[in-house]
Amino acid sequence: GTSPYIYPVYGLGGLPEGFSRICAIHGGTFMLNQDVDEIIMEDDKATGIKAGNQMAKAPIVIGDPSYFSKDKVRATGSVVRCICILNHPIPNTDDSDSAQVIIPGPQVGRTNDIFVCSMGHGMQVSAPGIY
Image (cartoon, rainbow, N blue to C red; front, side, top):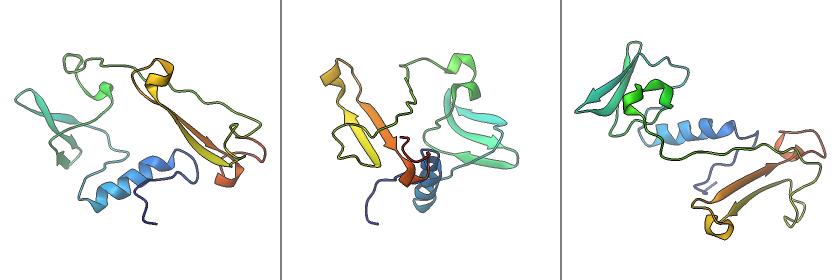
């Protein structure tokens, strides 16, 4: 469709696949299942990576902290994740088989918004009656 949003039809694992497609369309490099051999540093800034005989350079490098030396990593926040298995759709969603609910952070005394994704059997991610 014409929507700029990616919806994970077969579960949230489809998000990296969708992101890699969009990345390729816009000329980006998305490296999957690659062991990172080296983080390329220039002027104390990460500017790329080496993986085997491949090298990718970019104005910003995003990666799991385990790829970087401890002196290059600093905590800036935390992420809380939760998986809930329900036997009913989320209330007030018109019994939708899938829904996304965004709770504005300030409404619940938080800095950041809370994102809730619910998917049921119609999305091929659970047994009938499980959400």
